[in-house]
Length: 108
Image (cartoon, rainbow, N blue to C red; front, top):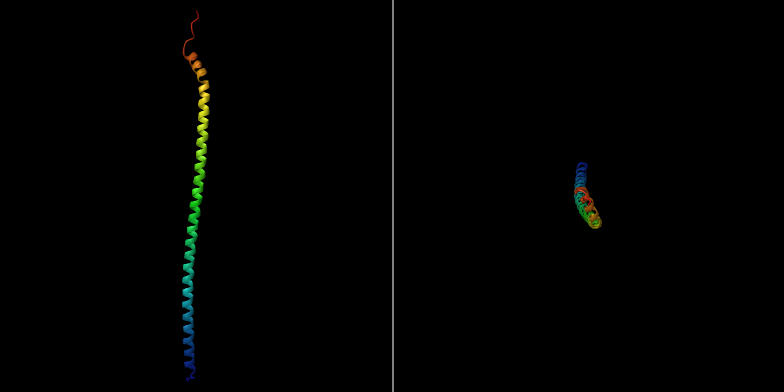
């Protein structure tokens, strides 16, 4: 067996160098895996966010359509009521216009 101190130092240096290289390799692998997992989590979160945003958009669009239909229905009802009211006042309005436009009838 070689008991030379320089040989022992070299052997220990090689051993330490190999341990450092192994540790660096393991660290690089762990970092790569962490980056891959982070990218995967970001992609999943983005997809969930897109789905949630689309759902909110569709919900808002449905509410807006319902509100528009209600407004149109209310407007149709109001138009019908105004038409009925106009029809009841039409003879009086025609008489008023006629008296304003035509000369008064001659008496006698």
